[in-house]
Length: 86
Image (cartoon, rainbow, N blue to C red; front, side, top):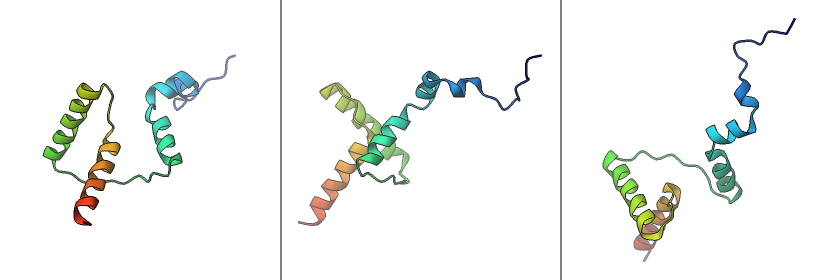
């Protein structure tokens, strides 16, 4: 008789393809962690989120590449630091 698997058994969890499909950010997070970046959480106004996403679209149209929000936030912080330290 074939052993029964429990309800908690997830056959897709064993598939490398499915892991990559459902967790595509894992590679990006590992890359960012390896490059010395630190994860931070910020609360933003909904209009700021819309503005950030619109900026992402403009960069994609202009440069043909996807700008990630972390990159945009690092650049914004650099501009603020430059403005207030002069």
